[in-house]
Image 1 (cartoon, rainbow, N blue to C red):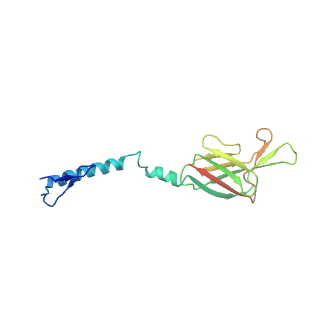
Image 2: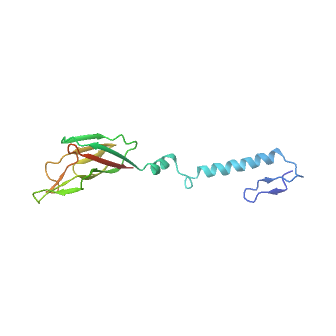
Length: 158
């Protein structure tokens, strides 16, 4: 004999003291619970994957390097993910500064990405490549992202 009462949502057995439980009734209840829990856990609209959770919890990576004055510099960032874009800037310096000639400026800030970047910087995987521009960009701008003794910061984003 099945139970006298049932739960309102899943119709699971609610046994009264006068009921005689049957193995079939318990197996049906367990099967219903198993199906509901499995369906809930597999619902991608309600749950996020471990990869999605990791992206949300770690959306960026910050690193530093010290300028060595070389014309070309490759920085292996040790970023734990493959970034899509990032920024590089000199600590304690403005993004750009007008030069004494009054006709040009030097940039100490750059935006880099996997598809395109500002002149003088590029991103490949998690590696940043810097090139000191000796010929002005846009006829009057010079990129300077590796001045000897200057601390630079980079922020890479997923």
